[in-house]
Length: 136
Image 1 (cartoon, one colour):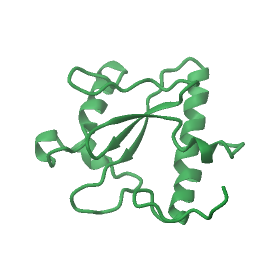
Image 2 (image 1 turned 135 degrees about the vertical axis):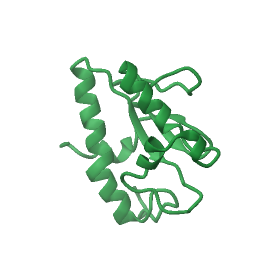
Image 3 (image 1 turned 30 degrees about the vertical axis):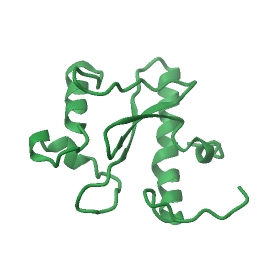
Image 4 (image 1 turned 30 degrees about the horizontal axis):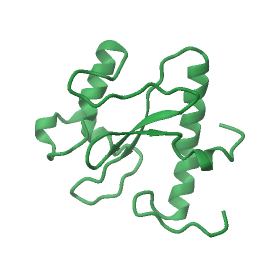
């Protein structure tokens, strides 16, 4: 990297980006990989939905969308409750009517991004940064 990173409109300033990478994103990917190697099914996600109230996305922002029924949320809100209920019922967050959520695998490190415009599949969440770490 030849330039100093600047603030990101979604991820925040450099301090916030690095603290979230070190505290949450990178360790979660390390744990997901370990669980996958042990034969356990894993579904990873990144909650990155900007609500109409314009509050920044922080740790725990998704809880509102898990605990509130879809009809009581703004149009276009992420269907977190539906995924979590499917997971509680079946051990798999996928359900009829929801965009597919691929299981985490070691080759692609797939995850589902809960973003404005609907859930979007992704791969290797912050892999360029997390690959620099050698510890969880």
